[in-house]
Image (cartoon, rainbow, N blue to C red; front, side, top):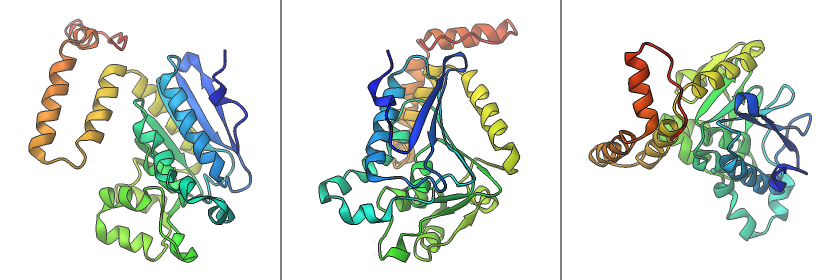
Amino acid sequence: MTDSRLIDLDGFRVAIDPARERADIVLDRPPMNIISMPQRDELRRVFEALDEDARVRIIVLRAEGEHFSSGGYIKGFLDASPEHVSHLAWNIAAPARCSKPVIAANRGYTFGVGFEISLACDFRIVSETCRYALPEQKLGQIPGSGGSARLQAIVGIARTKDIVMRSRRIPGRQALDWGIATDCVPDADLEKTVDALVDELRAFSPLAQRTAKKLLNDSENATVATAIELEGHCYSRLRQSDDFREGVTAFHEKRHPAFRGT
C-alpha cells in the first residue's frame, strides 16, 4: 500500500526505484519550481515517510527543468500565519534529520528556500549552470529556513555576510571552491554524476552510514574533546554489528562485502 504522505503532493512528486534502493523527490512546478508554503509541510512529511521506507537506502532531491528552484512563493509570506512561519526552518531541516544519505542535484537558479533545503542535504552535486543565492534582502527580509546559519557553518561569517547581505549569486564552480558544493560538473553530466554517487553510497553498510551521519550532525558544534568522545561511543557500538564483522571478513577474503544493515 502506498504511503498517503507520498501522493497528491503540491508542486512535486516522489519516484521510488526498489531495485536501486533509491527514492527521488522531484520538484515539478514549471518553469521555476517555486516552493509554496503548504509544499514545505509536505516535503517534511515525505522525508519522514521515506526515512521509514525499507525499500529506500538513498534519497535524491532534484527538479524538472533548467532551474532547481527560484525560491518560495513570495506572496505566501504575507498570507501565512505567524504559527506557520515559525515551522519553516523545522520543515526545511527534514533532509538533515533523515537518517539516510540525501543528495541534492542543483542546476540553474537555486535561490532562497531552494538553496536552504539543499544546504540541509548531505551532498550537493551542482552543474556549471547552478547559481546559489539567498536574495531575501531584496524583499526587506532575511533567510528564514536555516540558510544563513548552515551557510555560515560551511563558509564562515565573512563569506556568509557577502552572500546574505548583498544577495549575491554564487556560481557552481565558486560554490565548489568555497566548500558549499560536493562536486561541480557540466550540465549534461549532472544526472549521471548523481547516479554514480547513489551506487557508490549503496555499496557501504547502511548501519555505518546512518551512524556516521548522526555522529557528524550531533558533533558539528561540539568541542573537539566532546566530538572524539561521541565518536568513540559510536565506534564501539558498530564493532558489535554484523556489518562490521562482514566488512572485516570480506577484506581478508579479498571480496566485496555483502552488508545487511545489522
